[in-house]
Image (cartoon, rainbow, N blue to C red; front, top):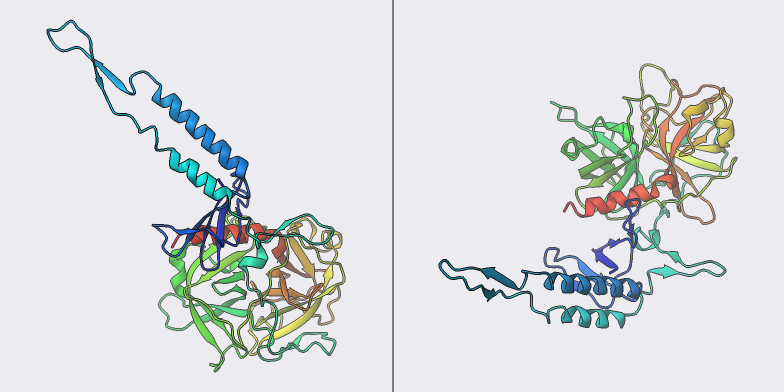
Length: 412
């Protein structure tokens, strides 16, 4: 039976094949539904219209097992020999009532009358039916800033961003042990009212018990000043990708993490959500995207000096084969990464220390901003010839992002 558990903004369904790789789909649960006893805020939607044959097969198998079990010797009778009596007697033992599977038949009949949820699938002209995963569960108004970013001038070395023109920019701050003050560690991207996308290497550990030392700061422009638009939210849980092994291994594969806020983060003119790209979306070499953050503006190798104001830089996407050349990054770059930047060292813009975890934002076939990359690594000193900035490719990890949200959903 195809079943889905639906929350306020999340619908979770068990997959048809039961595989563990992205085994969930988001559905719109309307029509026939009832409350779960253990989850009063959830609804149980049993959609037999999507898989009536599976429901029938399950029911037939169930009845077959029931009949086989009830017909086994000794199930409905018990033999015993009373002491001193050579006559074998039997004692009837009540078995399961034969009529109790009938409600299942009635349930199947009722479910077969249910119509298929209209929002579960969409059919585009000339295309096959596509399951609506991101469109139903992620913010519909994502990627739209109230204050438009300044992109009129050609950015050469990066510049100060227009205040609040990148309203999904997050400052992830930690309170060191024994201190009362928070310090900026990494950037991040607000992608949902409860979720921030960032890099795994920002955290020494990815366990929930470390979350209390962190906080999410949004609506900021001047990093070291208190601003009227800024909002501070607690961190509830931190999820690093399970395959992330740095610094045990030198490679920064799977450098992605999700941070769950302790409370909902409502949108405003100063706080918005960035869009996630579609699965496996590619970026054309030469396409310009933008990186934002409070990273080191000097590019020094030793002392890191964070920027006072949020900076932005326009970077071209570098061809993957080019970035894999030995004089660039060689085999340190995987197809789950994106290279962006300039080849020369004449003060080009680049993602630097403090920008880690921040977004690489691109506009493709629509005016919305999508977070296609997460700042991962670059050369020491930030501006080195043939060493562009490297980003975790967000589109590669959409299944992991979805699966992580679902896993967290059942930790309430």
